[in-house]
Length: 368
Image (cartoon, rainbow, N blue to C red):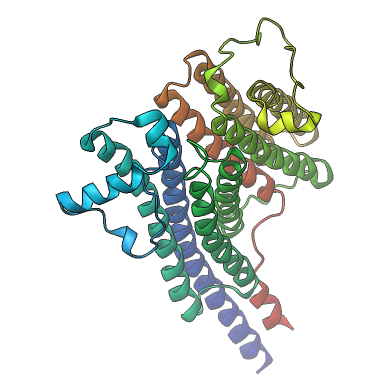
């Protein structure tokens, strides 16, 4: 009797494990689609910025705006709205309707992808939730990401509105906020995906390795924030030499504006220099992370990941230098932005790898 009961419990636990793993496979596939769409969204956003297209749509129409102009009259209406803002009057005055369409399509594509990611995230999540495929521990995280995504839509318009009245471009503060939130959503999805994936049973020095991995992920995100400030100020279009900047390793006139700290956000020279310093710090920390893990836990997946992460950061640094030397060529600049997301994703996966996969808590409940 007891043997039969034990066998039934074991069978039940096995079935629960199989069901959970099947559900996790579905969630992983969905999250990969979400991550890919987010990646495309950020790249299109970067292209929108590089082509100075972000102010071409001057109204926020979350629902109706999904449909582009379908007639000559509608195109002319959009163009007339654009003619009212300073960017047209001071920079693009005299542009043709066809030229306007070029910048319009970049911004429309960016907004279309933003709407699409909302549906790609929310609808499958609702299905998985209602059919019991979302584990209880993940529900707060998914709700948080959904809320952050909704807030990001508001931040996007808040950013655009900064360039419609007294400026010819958007505020670098708001641009950096917009990109950072997008990266937080991207990182959150990656964190959950990694936790739902299979992990190696090989252990690592958690005290040392986890701390370095967390530091690297935070530095990656901060470096992206600094890059957004550079983009917002068009700081990459000046001082296009490396390793020297304005003829020296540490250029002068970094703190001309008062108070001194405002230079960190509004002085293009200072912002570019700080972004360079951030790259050096990130490279140094990733090198030390690789060396320390090679010594502490040689041959483990954690050590191997640290090598790949270091190589990705080296490649990203090379792309950054090339972007600078080529005066922000759009193709190289977009490669630099895309690689930043890949480095961030891998740094998050590296950090999450030290924590192991989400345990099968239902099995423990059965044993009790």
